[in-house]
Length: 156
Image (tube, rainbow, N blue to C red; front, side, top):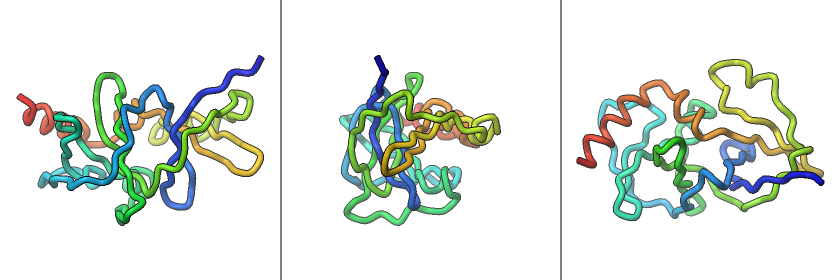
């Protein structure tokens, strides 16, 4: 018996990435994001989702060190990782997919501390999908403590 796990597939750059479905709260169309000055490049600002103020982070800035250019396909994947809600702004959220455990290879790059949020690469018949760990991804971001302080200060 092979195990599978469900994941939301999204595009960043020219690649496909996966986030485990159990971390996903919702997938939203792009709303207006309120910028906050003096924050790290990956931090786009804050957005209100279901009466909760959450940080919006730029997937392209995290993965490729460049800004995402939003269009009508742009989505925000709202995640919960270790009790922290945040939105990852992506080029497009394309599907929810079952990923068989036997298709996942563990990348050697995961040993490199800056990308320890790479859980693996799913090698499927017609494509490869990079699987991310949202908790490790958010914790790896330089300046995330300042972002958390801004959000927590705004919710009191």
